[in-house]
Amino acid sequence: MIGRENELNILNSLYESNKFEYLVMYGRRRVGKTTLLLEFAKGKNSIFFPAQEKNDSLNLQDFSKMVQMGLDGAYIASFEGWKDAFEYVDRKVDERTVLIIDEFPFITEENPTIKSILQHAIDHLWKNNKNIFLILCGSSVSFMESDIMGNKSPLHDRQTSSMEVLPFDYYESSLFFPKYSSTQKLIAYGILGGVPRYLEAFDDQDSIEKNIAKAIIRKGAYLNEEPSNLLKAELRDPNVYNSILSAIANGRNKVSEISDYLHEEKSKVSKYLVVLQTMRLVEKIVPCGEDASSRKGIYRLTDNFFRFWFRYEFTNNAYYEMLGVSAASEEIMSGISDYMGEAFEGICKEYFIRQAKQGKLPFVPYKMGKWWGNNPCIKAEDDVDILMIDKTGKKGMFVECKFRNSKMPHKEYEDLKNAMLAFPHIEEKYMYFVSKSGYEDSVIRHAAEDGAILLGLENLFEN
Image (cartoon, rainbow, N blue to C red; front, top):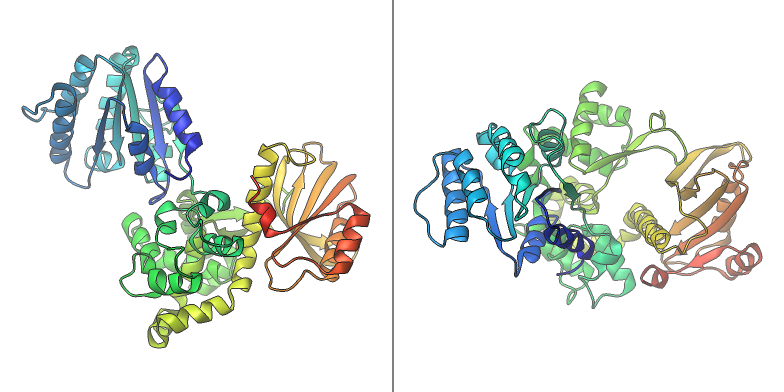
């Protein structure tokens, strides 16, 4: 499988420990949790139980079949209750065995008492059984964090480990498209993000434009209604959430702007935004270096595909239907450089995180992100695409990211130098530029004089 080496290493180390282990695994839908667990379970004594949205007795019956077939080789009858099932597991497991319950929230929705029953089994039976490795998995991030691991849950502090399975970064995502050029790989990531199920929808035998047409714009395509379907499956009022995501995707990133767009009270919009944040679809950011409570905070979509879909398909659905899928995708691609601006900043941030982990930066950033605000030296509003500050606050890396079809002009170089003037307290400064199409000669000359680093797309894929 592509990626997930680190996750597999963690799972294998837990499997090889000589004691009871209980892992809580969670992550948003389609991120590849089940695929990861199935890969891990290969060649091991394992019982994989995928809970479903059905009543409690039917889930218990299915679980009974799985554990009896796995531990005794035959199914006799359903257990009378979950307590009996868990006691059976404790009696029958005589060698290291992985017990995986996938989509555990489906069971708890029908039978909330299972959390207390499982807690009792762990405390009085399983924690003394070195042969059991329990994994509870779920797609509802907020539920797994609060109802399973939260301090009000019966299962609070019972887990020996937890793992949030995250989408791939740009580098890992590029491995899905070995035939694409560096530019195509980054555009594909800018459109699809790092969710494996979405990445698999594109075929690198076809152009980006053709993939947009057949995998996103075409009616009936898997990705055509995916964001809408996901919201319907997880939320009670998906229409309001659709409108909020559409507002943010189209540049309305303050609570006041979103509430005006929706004609809703700010307090109500704020509550919806909290839900979207727990789903890992939206994040609140403040200028790098400022406190999280800064009044300059804005909201943006964390998922590239949701940003793409709400900016194009959701907003222009009826228009694209009349225009036709080929013409619609051609129109989208004609302005893709503008769309890629925000996505490319995210890609560059992921690159510098990778570099920091490998010890290839002047220092390990303590604070990292976009900065915007007043620059007193030029008496105007200013911004830095990526600012990285060390723990002392005296060292800083300033990064400009450009995804354009022309060489980066000298003006952009001077703009970053001027932005750096807004940080007189940073004594040691480093300049980085990342440009899709290279640099004008004057930029190359001044960068050599100033010790600035000029990077191209090929540098992003150096491992």
